[in-house]
Image (cartoon, rainbow, N blue to C red; front, side, top):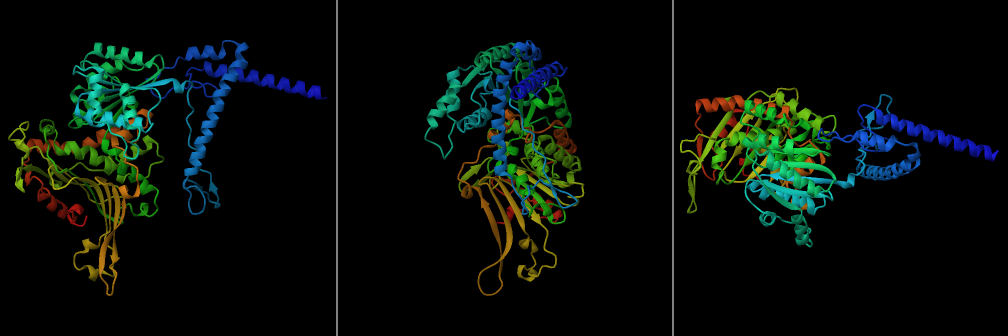
Length: 621
């Protein structure tokens, strides 16, 4: 009887193995060739990846005599995958937030009072040979200020914190003649280590610099990019190649570089991605033309349009603050919010960038991208998930719900020379690179409106300027007055002093604080407006990463949530293009304001027109 059972078991196992082998061969023979059993080679989503499907068919299905060894080989990968997935789920369960009733926050209540189990997030299956891949990062325009001051330091910071893969190489590409050692000397002057881990700084820096190389070439030369490709292949040593190109160059040569890089230096085995710096055109027409030209050589998924303000810590925290705190989400509408202000100010002028700046102005440089992107994140509806496309879809809806800016809702200014404390500060047109008759605004304030049910009638005010009295970037949310306020007489006639205000300070000294009314201790009834303050540098000891670090890491990992999609870009330009054309055709003269002042007086009249007082000018902060 025992022998019969053993024989039956062996027959069962043999049949199971035969079915397993047949299933794997049939899967490999499918036209799309997407998946192989037990986590084999998966077809990458990136269009640049072209796996050798036929080779894998042979390796999996050529001989039945290899079944047991193949199964043993794949089972080892499967066991590793199971271990990794188990670890990820342990982490997820550890950090999963629970509501007051003990259920996860994303659990779905049923009609009978029970709670449905939330949908599991899809966990990606690692590919075979994942540890044998090579990341090649090419910084195009490596000799420029942006590369030296931001990109190379951000890459080193990622390396210092062990965020980069084990196998990576960094190449600088520019027209400047330079050796590898000269590049290393140049970028070593701007590399810094985290304030809380300095003990191995020098060693890490030397290790990073050994991975940095340089190739000199023209931006429109296919031959020079072919030479770069040869050098990259040599460094990659036959490994699976993933390539990231960062275009730190003027926009007029974007297309030349993309054409040469995509045709001569893109990856043949892994993904190829390109990070494009703003400006993305000057208006709707030029932006569409740029997108059209880029799409001749790249797909939308390969293009990462970077806006570094979206990588700032407080901007990233904006959706967390709103969507994970019950106290805020119900208030996030016209019913409770009176106005929202997006404020950007710098305490210095163009200082050497006058030639570039004069071609764009403050509206194109700051408002159309940085501030408008933050506005879209602030005002969007709750996305279906944290998936990049879900978030970007909601942002596009906000932008399409806004009416184009009108000239009467905009104030522009330009700073003039000023003497203070025995020191003279030059005006904008005193810059030798700026035309003496320039009417390019260095300051702008605007009132925008969103025509949807949530925000109808709420003014969204933007203000951006150079050479002002302070440096700051912040979001200010002013709530409505308390109806029938019992303590109205304690505030006098100025009810704005009793207005609750939520402030998110993006820079400097990142903070979130809420202004609330409070009784001053003592006899009598004297009220005061106080701050409930979360100051990041006192609450968190770790240094806040630079925005470029977060965005570079996202691009490497293929996370697109904080990058701008083409339809999103088009919707943004649609809001500003009519205004910009009208200003240029009518040659609108900007209102002059002294260097180091609070900006033109017209900005106060614009705010008053919409029954708003600028929150940064009250003197309370």
